[in-house]
Length: 363
Image (cartoon, rainbow, N blue to C red; front, side, top):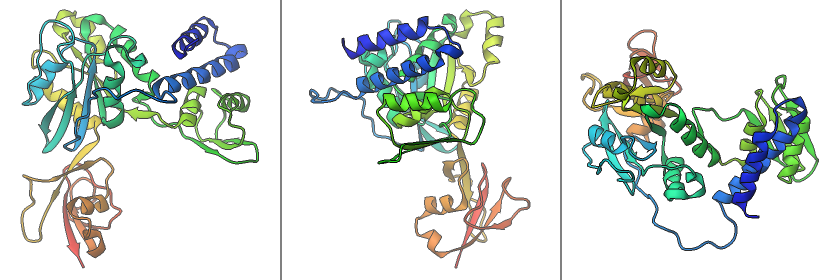
């Protein structure tokens, strides 16, 4: 029996098993086996053939956004509208056969947008060059924009989430707060800092034995599930923010539009409408901020500015200007929302906000 057949059998058994207290250990083991087989499917052991043509596109700009969706949902049209790049679009499926990059200029930042070929059901197993498409998003993207057809209701979103989940991409989720460290001996040490309602020591031990791990330290800092613990053991999961974009909203009722608009992480675009909100949401999900620099006795440089990540400190700003500035740094003057009064004298550890102005004073 091949790996695909084993995966199919386990999925069928999970589907027909009732979820209750008596079956939680059995389901936990099945999910651990499923994750192990999927890992083997993605990274086959032994000799491999010659590599095929991939979607290697040089990363440029301040951030990279991957455009994922089914064929003929409007990905290429969105790329043509937001960027100066032309991607062929037509009224038949699989018009785009390779990765086409474009650049969005917004708030002084250059955001690279990748138009990937359409995904079909079974892409995680390699159907329709699905692995190459998903790998382009998994390895290099900072944000996944999932294009959906509004006339297909929730079907497309659920199917795409399932395909991405099966290859180790976790959308809009944080990394589980679990400490896991394999050891050479000493057995298993299990501790938890919270009351466990979704997992317990017996289930953790069974999952570890499935992966042939008998000596390790495990510390649960949050009430995590067995699936999240399996993700920590494998250690190759990618946690990406995802923005769901609905197209073709002119073909559904206003009640359906209102229902979709109230869901989290959603945006609409249709016939070049609502693109400003889409770009605003993209900026927010990428966690970008813009910081302006100022020389002593001069006005701030509002035409330039530095594009950095949300939560950056004055030290990150110094490295963005020049990596040697921190060695001669004395203090900085900051104007903006991150300080109590303007200007305020701050050190290297001060956290910057969007559209702050900074003046660096050297020794």
